[in-house]
Image (cartoon, rainbow, N blue to C red; front, side, top):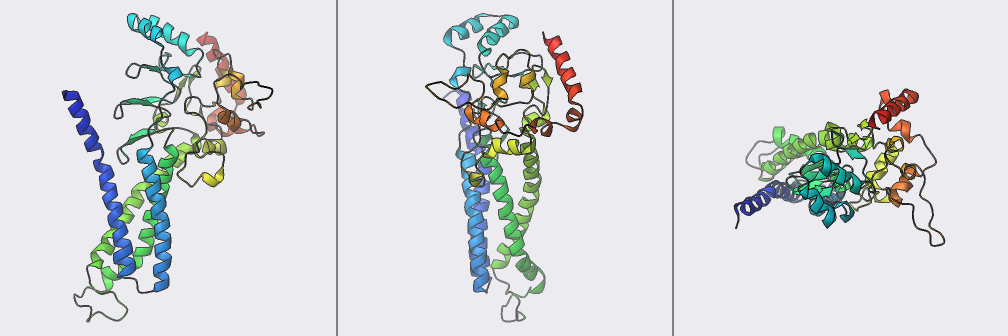
Length: 379
């Protein structure tokens, strides 16, 4: 076996250690809460039933969303973004970067690609040998290009991107609720174990206090663990909620996507409601379930800048509603899928202003002048 293959196998094994740790903590928390707290510590039957019902609901949703985040494969670019054999051979033969870019531009002219590198070149992955769709990035840990890549999360040993970003958000939300519920319901017993009864014999315990049994350790440690995870998850979940509201990925938050008119960190922002629907879908009844309902195909996205792109001939499809198919007519040509056109097909057209930053929404005429000036320089 080659050394590179051995190293790759070791990396895969090590990658599962954080997942194994989270699994152990979840299993122990289940035992500590159900057995040690609800069965051995709590005396009220009504309190036991209520705690157990709510606990199991939150536990099931937490495990379900965590499972889906881990085992949902990252979405990869469609085959149309790969160079055909002749173009690939011609690309490999060329030694000048300018000539290679000409080949990529010729292939990409019919693709829904609107972002560029920092120097204005076509985004191409030599490792995967594909033209990168918008918001697609290569993950070195997974060794593949991932659609709408957000980050590689070691706690799920998977890339978080288009195919599982909703699951990741639900995992954070249900983890937060799970820890909050445990900490809130264990608090009173934590205080009793900590301050009221330190005697070794349950006979000598004052009436109404809890005996000093082995459950004490589990209850005390359970509160500390739940509170610690709650505090750490709260900041992470709040940050990703902000990203969803702005329709950005973690990568785009640190480095604004480069359009052909220049960088714009709000280029994909369509307004809060439409940004939310891109991740969770347009059917609210499925929002809280770890079922894939995100809009689009992961390769093309509606933007608020593409209509100003001087190099794109089919920009009208991004702002018009999807047309019905009748009399054997086919859908309008790409770049947008039907679900994405439906996302932009609402009667309210205020999303352009709603998705902008304060400085970009104060003076639309000034923005138009800036984009017109950028178009002149680009041509």
